[in-house]
Length: 184
Length: 225
Image (cartoon, rainbow over all chains, first blue to last red; front, side):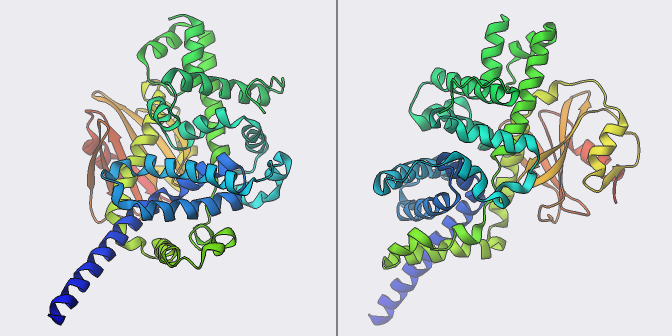
């Protein structure tokens, strides 16, 4: 009987290990996207790192609920979005100082540090989250309008409007005309 | 299509492959210029959005996370997540699947370049390739687009070659882990092949296009400097 229990435990252990390896192998390629998404949502590297950890922990806890591996990416992004919202609620975080956020960790963003890129980052930082989030989903993560609509729970038409306004605001910023329609 | 409608669509997605939009751009020089401007703006947005991730920091409990260190489950999860980077060799197959997906997604995002038919000056192609330590033996036959794009954290040459059976995209992925032999993939209507190269891999993909033929020709023509 003891050997039977031992075999069962070994089987359970093996299964857990396999599951863990599956989780690791699925999540590893998505780290950069996940971090980029969180960073541009909260505009704070340290906070993005913390929330990314929480997101992966929460994802691991409910990994059984993921029936389709192809849905992992949107699933993780949804968890990340909720986790960030929870963090903001829980901590009552102070409003991010945009100038400080841009300058705080220059090395972290300096891989292509020409003037236009820096200026564009500044413009994106100033975009209202309502416009910034769909833009990040589309440009950085390659989401279609339909996927963004599902992710945000809004219509495709609303997504297209937000994307259009976001780009217009960024264009105006880069042209230096200072029209602030989509900026905070 | 009216110019206003064109502006709205392009403003929401400058890399749209909508046939009506592309046809309008062919017919209207003002809108064509607007399209180019928005595409350039999008490339800049993309560069600005790319944030390097320090996996050693994001994968280890620290700061706020330490407050939850008493949670055994957290420790288990943190340690398993931390091991992700150490266990990269375990997920070669998955990573390769992911590479195919990312390549295809990139090509789709920049699908507007597939519609170009004007052959590029070989010196332009040469410049793009040279920056990545590559040159072509022959003339840059039928290359209609050449640029350096950011993919999976690296600058990679992105070429489009026009053939009688359609456009073929070539990505020179010198930083990717080598493969033992050609790996074919099908993704979102694209057929592709990832082939070993002296440095990294080449990815060649297209829709109903002679990818194998182009891959073979390219491997003969590429010189790794």
